[in-house]
Each structure stands twice: as C-alpha cells, then as structure tokens.
Length: 385
Ligand SMILES: *Cc1c(COP(=O)(O)O)cnc(C)c1O
Image (cartoon, rainbow, N blue to C red; front, side, top):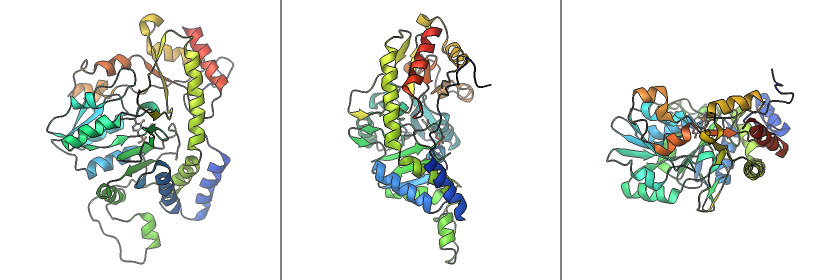
C-alpha cells in the first residue's frame, strides 16, 4: 500500500541514483573483476583528493572502520572510550565488543554535539580514545576537543558518517586527523554499503590496511595482480572488511556529485527553516557559532510535547498515516535494553541527551526532494498540530 492519503508516500530518505551510477556499476559487473580492485583504488584516491586527507582506506562499512580503528589503537580490557550516547549504536557496541567501557559525554541541548567541556568531565586515567560525532552534517568544535586530547595524550577518531562535504573552520571534515565516513544508502553519498577511513597517521593507516583483509598486508587485488609472487602470509590476525569494486564504482560515481547533492540538501533545509517559523510546536536545532559549512545530512526538529499535547511517537505515527516518513536519530544508546541492564551510566545523568530523546525526529531530506515536498511536510505538520 503506497498511496495513503491520495498522494505518494514521501520517505524520510531515498538515494539519488543516476544513469551514470548504473553504468559505472554495470561496467564493473561486465569486467570480470568485481571485488576489491582498480575501482576501489580510484575511489580511495578521489576521496583523498576531495577531503584533502593523506590517505583513505575503502571498507565494507563505517562500522568496520570503527572496529579496525579501535583494534589498531589497541583498545581493550581496562580502557575507556568517550563518545556521545546520542549516536548510532555501532560505535558503542564495538567499544563493548573490544572489552572496553563506553563513557558517554553529554551533548549540547541545541546542537546535539559534544564539546571539549562535556568531554573533559568524562576523562579519567583510563581514557584511551575520544569519538566525537559531527551530528546531522554539522561540525563539532574540534579545536577544543583536540586541545584536550593532545594535553592528555588521548587519540581522537571523528565519526564523520553524517559529514561528507561539511567544513570546520574552512577545511573539509576528514582533511586532517582521523575520521570515518559511511556510504549506507541514507548517507550523503552511497556505495550500497561502504565506509572510508581517512587519516594522517601513517602507522594507523598501515594497521588498518593490513587488518581489513585477513592481516595479510595485501588485498584481493594485490593477490590477483601479483598472484605469481610468493603467497602473502598473515602478519597479524585480521578481518574481512574490504570494499568491493561494485560498491566502489557506485561510490566514486556518487562522489562526483557530492557538491550538487549538498547544495540541494541546503536549499531544502533553508526552505524548512523558513516555513518552520509558522510552527510554534517544533524547535529547530541551532547551528554552532564558529565558522563551518553544514552538509545537511539530516533535518532534525524537536517536538514541544507539552505544547503539542502529544508524544513524539504519536506525532511520527500521525505523519506516517498522512504519507510522510520520518526518522529517529537517535534513540540514545545508554537507554537501550542492553545498556540499561548493564548500566555504566545512570538514566538521568545525561540531561541534554535525555531532554532530546523523547522530542527529536528527522524530517524527510534527500536531494531528489523538491521545495513542494517540503511545503507538503510543513502543511501536513500544521494540519496535525
Ligand atoms: C550510519 C552511521 C554509522 C555507521 O555507518 P555504517 O556504514 O552503516 O556502518 C556510524 N555512526 C553514525 C553517526 C552513523 O549515522
């Protein structure tokens, strides 16, 4: 059932796949080489050229990238890793799977991002890594985070899953330090699934390259092209997280349109901001006061539940019944079943995260949408409220 109120369902997100994307993938499928190969190498290089990083490693997901980063940094038993609870579950799951303890930094109530201040309160002698999240396509105040991290000798891995094309102080996120991007279909570009690990740390890059393919120190392509040289041997036990050429061809083709995608997202976000002045029950996020460029991965609003006289969940159900899809980014990790039952963080201690938990929702936002779609969302919201 698609048509609910007579018009098509507007999903919360939809990938923008062009004929060029399809052709690029078809070419790989016809080529006789479909796993990690020349397309993966070309995508890595193009990604480096775009964000301005020293080197980039294509992977099967951003989650894989986070796993490899934590492994390469030696995170394990007795270590603590600081990250927000207002994030995707993958980061926190991995911290736990590595045997370490997640420590949740609260976020700013109106940007949903951590800062040097909220992180500083979480630092202990056990802190090994800090993982800030550039939320919704905005940019964390990295200067304050890096100052703190350098002083305490703690490594920083930026979760840039939302932030392809975002800038912080006139530099693209990913251009320095260590960051991880995602190409899941809802992200600003997609590779079907996929991730990119960017770093300026040569040692870490070496480890991640080795660990992503069985710890062999070569990948499937090397084995193919250098097949007659002596068989590669395990340098250390590794994983199977390489990016296929099928994915890379799609990612590379999409990367060519990132600026176009993001300017469409920006225009739609501006229309939302304009029209939301008509809706008193929705509270927008605020934007940071330092120089940055928004990638508008998500358009998040908070429902003033008292004023609206309904819960956020009911509001989402009503929107869906009227043909509007929404998303929830995120249900705080420390409030999820496993983390409640194995609590290191008392519910109630992350005041701003929890204030937002019952109020946030993400409105439809993707490059294939039109300004008319935005108007339809706002008109429907006004009708419901
Ligand atoms: C999507 C996302 C991830 C994980 O990306 P995958 O490629 O799906 O593994 C990590 N962190 C955040 C904030 C995300 O939104």
